[in-house]
Image (cartoon, rainbow, N blue to C red; front, side):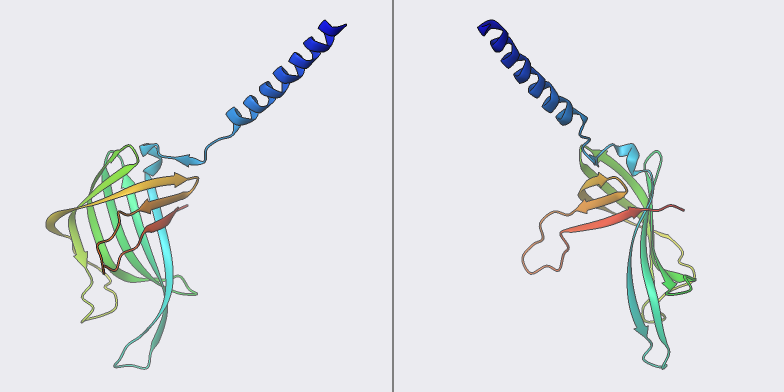
Length: 173
């Protein structure tokens, strides 16, 4: 009789251990750092109001930063301005092209060509011509959690105006 009770106790312990093992092994870690998951277009958006000093016109706009990762290792970055409400594309604030490589959870991006809007002329430009620039690296730690790409930046020097992290959403178009 004691053997049966003892065997029953071992069965219960085995069953509980097996049950928790299955639960732990079946839980997916949503953070993925497979470099191939980077491919595609990612964006973040911010809204604002722009008023020209010389006019009484006020523009309600959406500022959209898009980063494309194109196989095998090309990046295209564009900061676009859209009219809020109508979502009409108005122009660019920035465009850039370059390359990238991944090492573990580190993303290294290099801008080879860039174009910046001339704020003295206008808030945005309908076209910006890319010109070669001195190759500047940007190194971030990255995480992909489902459809969210997060850049984690290195610590800032004292008195610098930096951000600690930045999130992008996978574009559906």
